[in-house]
Image (cartoon, rainbow, N blue to C red):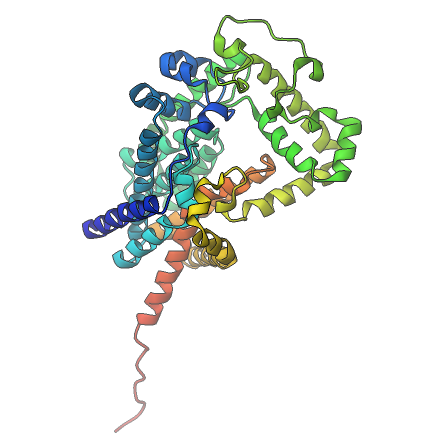
Length: 457
């Protein structure tokens, strides 16, 4: 185990040195100045806690960025090192989970290193956004789930729910709690007469959920919405508009009956254009200022909360009146979900160009990788079913499959960028491929049954 972790660590850092020499660089801090989720950098630097309190977006990534800005300033090198260690953590947890599932240490180390040098991993590691952290938290959640069912101790349960809390506070992943609780109820039912102790352990483990409830209560008090992220309409509307402009029939329908659904919310629509009155001033710069110091729109302002509510109402009317058109959007979102994650729309060419033919070959060979993902998932499902979900490996793979299914629910509310969401669970898909390969190798190594002679000499 220690040797395998050492091999993964050395291989990981050598690969990063190689990628650095071919021209891979951290994609700077442009996202910090422009992306809608970020609080204005001067506020994060000089007024971090108050800014997090008044922000209506999930707070965790802004907290991470704010601490980094306070310590290192706007240093791309510091953020590059942070992402480098997140990638290392992904490698260590992936290797640990593979070996826990019965994968041989050599195969586990080789599979981990192969995953860590794939182009999507390199690109997301060098791109400033919460996606890479989300990938780590999903992987940690599945690993801590596996450790918890092996030894139902509060420490492992706390780690599981802490990762679920991190996902909720990073990207409003609240429904993940439901999946965890459903699995625990199912597991308690299968364990028979010993669920009370498990129930107590689970209740103690779920204490990180109180932090999410506190953030939701804060948003209810300030913004009248008991949720981690009251910008649901804003997010979904942006993806809807991106898709609608590519469909002449839907575009004509929206122009006639839903004009707001043709105004991209990220293009700073003025209040007069939307028929809104300017919200009353609160005296809090984060809530009042229409723009950040960088010149980009301040999406944390009260005005954009009103805009989000308008998009929510318009989208609800559209979906109820035209469910088949909405189904068309979901179909496209599903297709986008399974596209290569290295071809994400908003990547710049800064790092794809140095990857060159390697990036091209990955995209060209991606259909084969996708087929392996599907085969691995089917194999894991059938193996668990054959064993009646008995044993830690079968139950963990079932939980990983449920996590993948949960992640795919994004296609119903995020009508764009789904290839980015899929990247966050690609380590879980990779685990199933490696697990299937290990079982095939084990079958090949088993000696054929000997044939005993029948009768006398």
